[in-house]
Every structure is written in structure tokens, then in C-alpha cells.
Image (cartoon, rainbow, N blue to C red; front, side, top):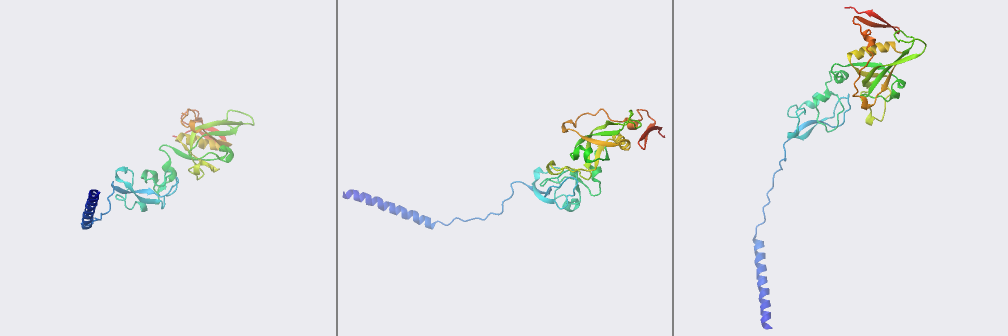
Length: 273
């Protein structure tokens, strides 16, 4: 019994000595030195790119909606405007007009802007095309549901007894004189309203035409009692048009003659050389 007590006492003494040794070493160890690090460097190179702070509708000036924003340098396209290359771009471009609808956060490209010294309509008109304004009303334009960038057929209505109509009597005849024509604007509206839900009933439609079509509709406006725009399905816009009323300006295919329209009467006269 005495031997066991001695053994237990020896173990306890050894443990106490070990604990004191550990405590002594911990107390003598100097505290870890904290090294203050400088600001972290970005993982990738950044450049400031000119972007839009808010949406800009087509045909509206960008105004104060231009701002610089950090952009990954390796993601900058050739058309982007950087602060490094054009630090004064905000002041130079704020009077520019949006050629198409621009959206917030979108990098600014010059190809989508029109300088303040240029006409908007002439800038968006494709090469070789003409813009012709045609008088319309709600009852001749699909009840007002025709919007810019829609495609329409132009229908001419005139009295049956009118010269050149090919019919006699007191009734009316109708003819589709142009097909699949793009509408550029309704009055001064050059794009549909937000989400396409609201509709503006205009009095003038501006149509995108070839030079020949421009002549056709000019003659038709003088001859017709009414011109009607018929809205086409969006699925038909790629349809190839094989007919238009070119007889109105070509003298039934005979060169050297033009059609003269006076007070609704049509006659052919020799063209001066």
C-alpha cells in the first residue's frame, strides 16, 4: 500500500514539473510580430470605359447619361471609348443622338451615335433608299396599330370613272400599289412605346422606299381618293415582292413618256430630253 502511494506521488510530481516547464517556455516566448501589408493589387488590369448611366431611347440625345466605368483591359473591344485615349469624350459626345435604343451599363460606340450636325432620319435611312411622308388617319392605318419598323402594303382607292382606272361607273376600285414597305416613323414617333403596349395614332407615316417606289407613291397621292396602309405579319417581311404599280410612272413600259396627273386626270406626255 505504501509502495502504490509512492508511485502515485512520483507521477504527480513529474506532471507538475512538466507543466511548470511548459509554462516557463510560453512566458519567455516573444509575441509574434504583425507585419502590416500594403493594399492588394487587382487580380487583372483595369481601364476606364465610357458607358451609359441610364437607358437612352432611339432618336434622343445622350445628354448627361455618360460616365466612366472600370472595365477589364483584356475585354475592351476596338469600338469602345477609353479614358486613356479620349479623356474629353463625355463633353464631346453629350450632344450626340442615339441611332438605336441604348441601355444602361452598355459601353458607348460611335457607330450607335449620330453627331448633332446630322439629321437623324437621313442617318438611319439605308443607302439607296428614300423617305416619303404619306398622309394617314386612324381608319386607314390598321386602327392606329401600325408602329415604326412595321411592314405594310399601300392600297390605293379611287373612283371607277377616273381616267386611267380601267373601269367605268360611280363605284370605287382598289389596288395594292406597293407591298412589304417598312414604316420609318409615325408623325414624330420613331420607335414604339415602352413594351409596345401603348399606341400613337398619327396623321403622317414616313415610309422607306426605293427611288422608283417614291415616284409611284407620289403619283398615287395625287390620283387616289384615299391611300390605306395594311399591316403585314412579321413572318411575311422576308417575302420577295414581284409586283408594284410601276405603270404609274413608266408610261406602261414605253420609254420617252411620263404620266401627267392634273386634277385627278392622268395623261401621257413626251418626256423632254
